[in-house]
Image (tube, rainbow, N blue to C red; front, side, top):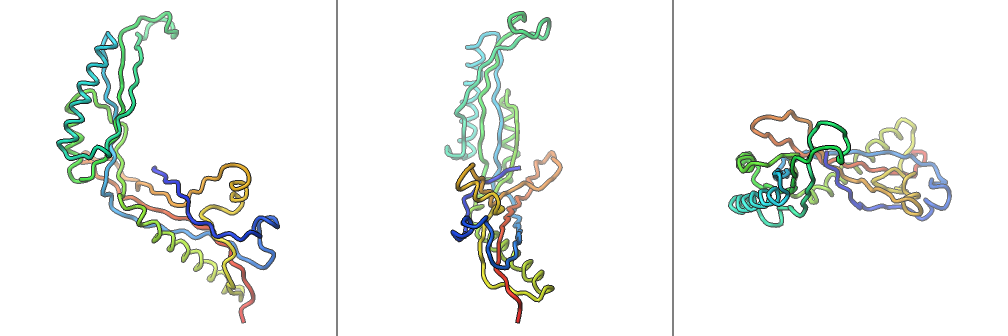
Length: 244
């Protein structure tokens, strides 16, 4: 599941923190929810390029040689440089499995050099071919394939407004049964109000406003990419009074 941390707008009166965090007038506290599902139009590929050899330098040469082939392949497939991350390199000795678990008493068998890659494929229909081509280079070990939406930021205002509307609908539905009505909005937040004061004046607050999650779907040989669900939660306090 992919989570996106956002700093969404907080509409909070100063008095919210002056008297224990709640209004001194009749109020109703509701949580609105909304979600929008979009087809994935980008795929993120995560994989490690791994080389092994009795000599550390040979293992590194093997990895770097294959890395050059990967860069050439990605360029040929018109993957932009900004969509490729390959900044890390790890080298570690490998030992046999016999004897003590302490490396000092085990036989060194060689070295493993790993170079992590992350790249974005913006042609969803063509990415399965790219996966096969990468595996064909050898030494490529995939750790994840995840769909995403390139214009997720543009969807956020829409799902935010839907969550606000959902909160209002719930409040009005509840108040009708009590012969009450909404007078005004006291506060709006993407997180529960008890967390806000601690976040502003004390511990760090995680303002989790919108999250996008791949819908659950079984893996298939043709690499079907699941749609992306963008979910918004909003907490609203409305001041209320008797309906006339």
